[in-house]
Length: 459
Length: 97
Image 1 (tube, helix red, strand yellow):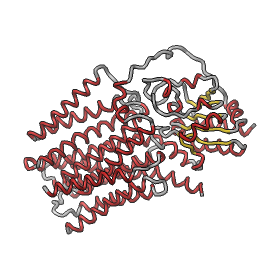
Image 2: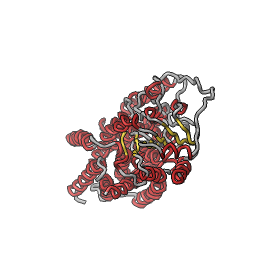
Image 3: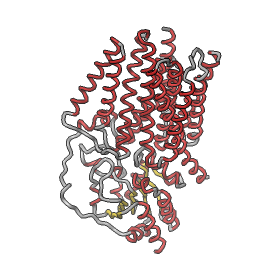
Image 4: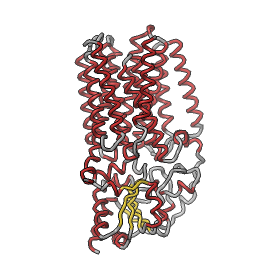
């Protein structure tokens, strides 16, 4: 292909990516934006087979590898449950970072002694950040999938191990830049993989999604750097866009949780060890039946439903809507109080409730719903815990301290639908459960809601 | 050298575009936006294909084919999963009207 035409079509693909991100920033155009992005990606992929000056070898294995990737990726994305999407995104991000590290390594091997110092530095950057993103994403996947503990993992002397690994990593990077060769590159890659693991292990609880977003931005920058090594404009533009927008997004997410990025990443090292006082003592909670809950709701003027991860797990979004409609038909003022990070990802609840066709006006964000709690008779907490935990205000040093919460304690009554007394994702006891105005209804959220709905109909 | 400088200029300008396009996004869309951006960096597939088609010896060929598999999963899976998330917003709009 003529190299001007090739460059021009590449530019079209790059513009598609800008329009895609722009589209994704607004609810009306989000889906179209995603499709424009997919078109740009397809265009770029087809285009590279006609790259001017390429050798066009290995065509069959290349097409086979693409087909294999599609066969793995599409069913994974199609079949995944809504609740598991965050970890799938983490996994996709990780393999992308791994791919970028491999691409730069191969190009580095091909250039050999002919590589310029700028190319070597870009390669070092790609391999280091790509490997960190790869292993870090795998750990976040394991955490969210609950294959390993969701709590921060801190071991004695952990910070020295991390600092030591980082120093060794920087040293090996210097070694690669100075003397080149394959062996230093492999050692550097191994150190970067280890650093990725160590870097994510101490992050726990609700901070994991922020780390996914950060690693996503990292992978973007990795792609941009490999674009520099390959002199591919499209990779530079796409990678940089993701790196820049991902950085902003990470900051927005951290802000929604009321923490600094620094605190999120290094919080586990500075936090004081939690006292486990009260863990042994058995305290009484008030648990009620579905009928009790139905009566409370029936005679309320205003009810706020606070959904959380438990709603997603139980797939109870349709049942919760049924309950809300039923209450509304009885003249009760019903709203949903949406915490920005309820669930496992920002916006998780909005997506879930949208699936159940909950009218948009009923979804009230935290800032607007908080002042209304004193006038609210009943708050129904469906599978949420950390986002209503007063410890975020009262217990300095606990993992969620400083996070803005939904002030449900201000309401007349609080009903918790919970599977068990197990603490939330962040692993902290919730004092509110022991409050005299709190009623607990144990069981799967969907079963409990169904029972409440039928009890309410019988009244 | 001037080529390197041109690439650097593209990089710097793209940083500003990236900052601008997502400057005001509502929390509702944080998850799909992250997922969509994640799919976009799957474009590393283009780089993987390029190095694979220039590979002559065994090791680079194997590594670059592996990179193609990983990048394809990232890109294709990423767009599909983002579309699934956004599909749910569509139903909501119908309801409002």
